[in-house]
Length: 208
Image 1 (cartoon, rainbow, N blue to C red):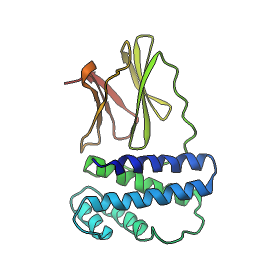
Image 2: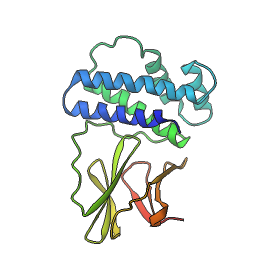
Image 3: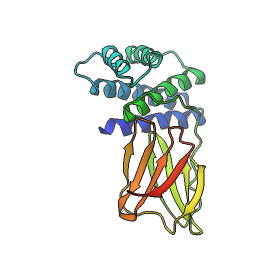
Image 4: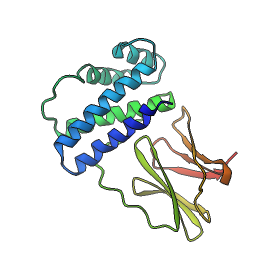
């Protein structure tokens, strides 16, 4: 998977944090960069340089639904035009579509639409040890405290605590399933987390 996926996630995160800071210029710059990265990612999926045709093929493969494909096609077609000042509602709508596009390309299947709201600075949860990584522009933290593990997504606790003495120190392997599940595996420590497609549910299990 190319580095553009991670770059697009970072830019979409910047859009959300800029919205929270009420910084229209930073928001506009991040959204423009995200749109160009989205165009590059779409063109990576097929041979050719026509984004509209590439999106049509992705719809035919059921990676995107037709309505999303049409909206993203219009957005990419206008990516080099100078935008009038966008309202927060416009930015949110565009960001939500680009976020869904990113997750659908990552999983190779149409993903559900999720909220794309302004994001305040994330506070690191208090813990005896922690491991963190970014998944589709979301900050995912695995924290250990009191012999239990907890998972946080953008500073929000999800799932139930589970027994864990300390967080893994090995490199995590991330795999994505067409069902929408994202699995984070620390093979050396024998631990895996399965994140739901809504980033609101998680299951801890022994790594296979």
